[in-house]
Image 1: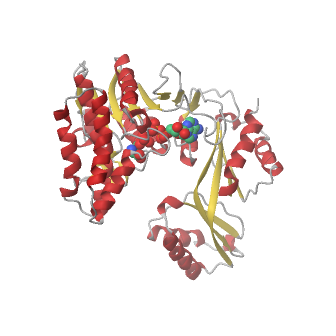
Image 2: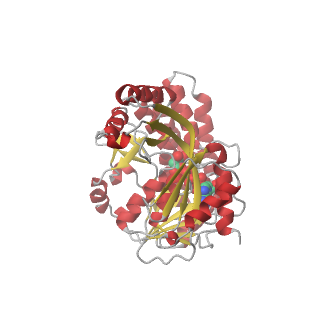
Image 3: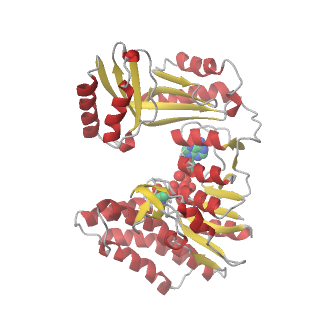
Length: 452
Ligand SMILES: Nc1ncnc2c1ncn2[C@@H]1O[C@H](COP(=O)(O)OP(=O)(O)O)[C@@H](O)[C@H]1O
Ligand SMILES: N[C@@H](CC(=O)OP(=O)(O)O)C(=O)O
């Protein structure tokens, strides 16, 4: 059995929907389809999820919502029209959209989560309707019914373990196709909470594990995962096969094509992942497999830069002699619910790298003030434009000289390297640099390893 997930770009309009439906119905093993919300149809277009965020904000601010509701509904209507779906079949979708402001939410964060989740919820409903209209036996199954339970914050939830026991109870008929909305689950208190952005990949992986799939196919708008972001490097080399660990390192730092958290359920269930193109399903795509059986052919599998980082740099003489020093800094971060990404340190210096998505300027000021008061460092600095380059490959494990091949093209381009972290993971080398140099650094390293 296969679980297939279609990204927003693959369900953006009628023709894309048709490709997705042809894929679902071409292989009887494809029994479970996970939908994202309709994505961008062209450059400059707005994803339905972003329209729903605007809708939620307008409701919170007590502003007029008519135009937004029409804009959102029209996206579903256009797809339904493409398949000549009878107009009355869309009444429930319209009704749910209009009812969103009338529900009770514990606070505005939950309101936001519920609005956002409806991009996928309504798209799954529409997909099931279209499939039935075309003569297929499809059924909408929601996270509420299937038991996708989540914990954590309403807009950045994580799956709860009991989900898997609940999924074990889900039954379906032999010839039945299940259509699931991605991106959200239900809290213990019964409220909708979403995963982080791009999180429909996570739902697909949870279902692949929970329903014991043989394969998780993730359909998107590129032929494969490439060894560098195609928006940074022209026609980068496609990756035919890589390990879970490689993908996790790469997606964490910015291979946005597959959500880094989505790997965990797949790893736990030992389900291989195949990333494929909705517009070219005949192409093999990229296979992501467990680590044991893998024989790498290249030294480097991929290079990526993440520009969403900032760093607290701290200098204090004899820092290495003080016990509990790092603990006190981490306690300050924990008090503000801020997690750190990396913490390279020297005898008198420490750099704490943070994901900027979880902080704002005023929180940084507060944290720096508390560190100054508690630790009294000789120097304390917030570096706002920190970028991380990850160079990843199972093939570098037993090689010597790789670091030299990574650093020399950077030196030739006069790119500053304020941090190197090698050894923590045997398959990845992490280079700290500044945002403005990040793309040039990726290009320089890419061309050294993949020029020919
Ligand atoms: N290394 C990479 N390989 C392939 N695509 C990448 C890579 N890095 C970034 N991307 C981008 O990821 C996009 C697909 O991810 P996303 O937009 O989340 O897809 P979907 O809408 O299918 O969920 C591609 O169009 C491409 O621009
Ligand atoms: N629609 C949600 C979740 C998602 O996974 O979307 P996509 O498949 O388009 O990346 C978002 O935009 O974040």
